[in-house]
Length: 137
Image (cartoon, rainbow, N blue to C red; front, side, top):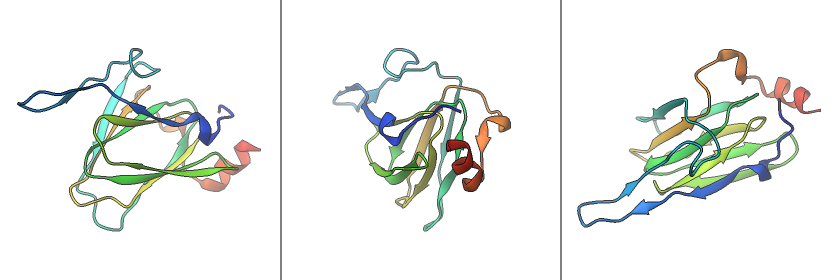
């Protein structure tokens, strides 16, 4: 697992092309984000008060985008924590490997889209916070 800091995670402005018929934002792997996209998934219909995430990854990079609505992302590197609010579809939060993340405070109708650098691999997940803290020592 990489020795990453919450300060390695940051919001990226994605190019928004405005048109009277509606806006479009294009995300291209290894072009406007620093990894090739191997998987895309999205979270939706999240009941009020629920949270998602609650894990870290050993190798996976993610770009987390509020495709609709808003929510907050807690980032934790084992020492430092920061919260990022996502609420615009032309901005994405780059989360690097070795960072614990929790998503919460979802607005009604929120859609969280995640672009990932790897296909699903259970071995890449760290699901217990104490195990994460021990690996960061």
